Image (tube, rainbow, N blue to C red; front, side):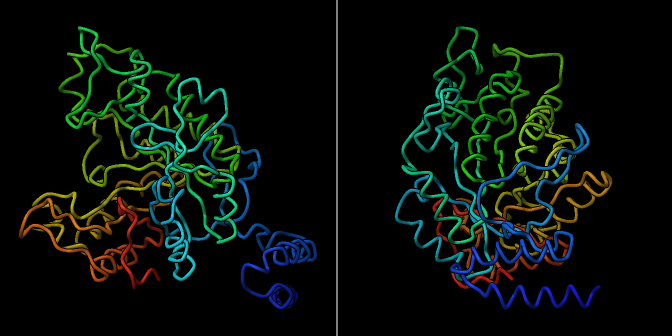
Length: 398
């Protein structure tokens, strides 16, 4: 049987060739090959093309990866402005010519704006769309043509737009004025089910548009919330903050998994190295048990003196990333079969705000060092963060 399968695979490769022009041939060839073999041995959508497909029904409530055949994801962050503007050309060129294969694109951004002109009534009720990405359909077609695995980033509870629009869904002082953090940013209340449903509705539309994964960010209460909660007016239930955030993640995954999309969550990197962050409601393990992918933000610049025995972690990217991954494995190994894919965010920016002697310019060497540290700890997926979407040339993405 092995000889027969090998022969079929040879015929498939001869029949389909290489390059974008052979996409249809590959899909047709895969169909013939799978039919001949009597089982699926080649993915007809190649893991990256077309809209997400409904996943087979699994055991109710039990997590199951809807895309088990997806290759390792190595991606970059892309703002809506870049996705809808001229910078997209250079970003597509980067992916065309390297081992990178994915883009994380803002669909609901850090302010709370929906980044394309949606016409869905359910979203327009609470949401405020913009035209940063003027033609979302055209964007999705382009991503498919370039074989880009598209991930929709949805910023959940940091939402200045919705907080202003509907203060009862946010946090207020006792005089009725809206609470904001030190940067003037508003958050909405994770206890409110309407907020859950709104963000998941955005995610569902992203799935229909063709995104293969939904990445939820700011899945937490504001930083330092435990110190200010008593001075604020907001609705809450009997659940703790940790259990409330975990319940949202579970709800989102159960709503989205049947659509064939993965669910991922960004989380502070240090969450893997400390007990649950009760103040902001993040428990690394509880969240990880409910997602297909966990993305700890392990930027060396975000660790302070002493982490992983480093005087200045930003100057030691290899040691810092390796230490963070060792702690991540220790935290997640005990959860067994519910352990998600670990796909960290790593640093491709220079943290000059740390001050002279505490930071270094991040070049190819520093980015390579982080990727090597991931490889040395058994991690073969990663995402690169640069707020301006300007990524270092010549990096060995493997």
